[in-house]
Length: 218
Image (cartoon, rainbow, N blue to C red):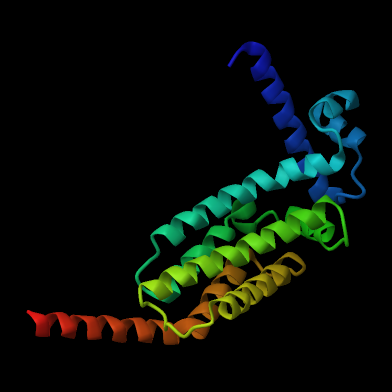
């Protein structure tokens, strides 16, 4: 990368960092491009050279980090832990790594508020992220089902929705409340263990049955 490209990359990152700080402090709607430029130490016209709209800037702040979380989720789906409950928890823990393990509550709250709008970039981001999360949960359950780690008769779509709803409820409770992130994440783990423990029992029974069949054949 040449010097000019390096300078462009540095300016672009300054804009993204400044936007992230101000979105957390003031919210997306109240933050202006002029304020972002001032926070970044740049002219407001420079911001528009990199991002045509404030919505495009919001997408650039949020989307890449979420993409990385979903890539981590994809790795869990490709090679999940042996126990079904551990597999589901491992997937959900990928999503809790957003913004330093959910510790940037102000930023998460601000992004959540933009997602509640009936239209706009915030709504598009929230819809995309929720769809991706539910799709990944369902994909993991199908892998577990093929491996006979959860019952074949399990309605994957319904269970994916239930798991997502529990996770999303706890996430919203966290960002709009005062409970520490670690406590909320621990509660998600506890709820998943309570909800899905029958799957672990099924998986253990399936493994024992498989071992007995192998012993008989040998």
